[in-house]
Length: 114
Image (cartoon, rainbow, N blue to C red; front, side):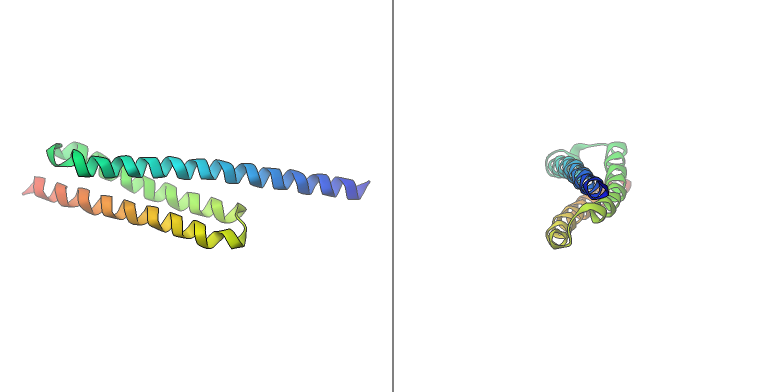
């Protein structure tokens, strides 16, 4: 019966990894939605905003960088090797979007100081 227990354990690990990957995908989707919201803010509303709100949004971008890095590490624990290149591309695009938002907010903040 040891063999049956090993199979059951492997199946449990697979389910755990699948559930973890599903959770990570949801978190990634949530970050993507936040990035889209920040992009819309920068495009449509940021120019009329006060310095304090711009700084708050910039702080949020910094927090998201940290969270994205943690997400990436968690993905590496559960994702199959063949899925990594596609995943890394998606995460890099999200990081690039965050970088553009950061630069845009910093530019607007520097104009407030002048």
